[in-house]
Image (cartoon, rainbow, N blue to C red):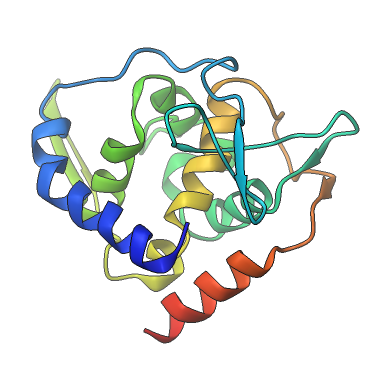
Length: 177
């Protein structure tokens, strides 16, 4: 996905995110729905055009899944637990993503979220201004999607594809911009 396309997706997400987050949930994700059908310079997409993972028969994961694993464990696991399994502080994202669409995920990560229930208040801070998260939101989504549908086990993926030029270009543009 080009930088301009990513910016348009994020802009639309920020505009419609609050409507999505108020209760419109997607149908449960599955390995079949998440299957990669197209590839743009090493980034894979499902039949709906949503970013997804690609795992080869020998266990090699695509670059974005591996990058998502790394980014998740640098910024998200402190609250959401290792490998997206949750903690006493925040929900298991490997479970949440089973019923959360891409737009809702982007909206929550960018804008944050607050929920109160059962005498407990949970606050997810906004990461829309944190380039270490913002520039890698697709990577995070792809990794957590693979975890949610059971395609990758807990732990560091043992093998990964090389970083594609598109990922290098996006990273340089986003981190410098």
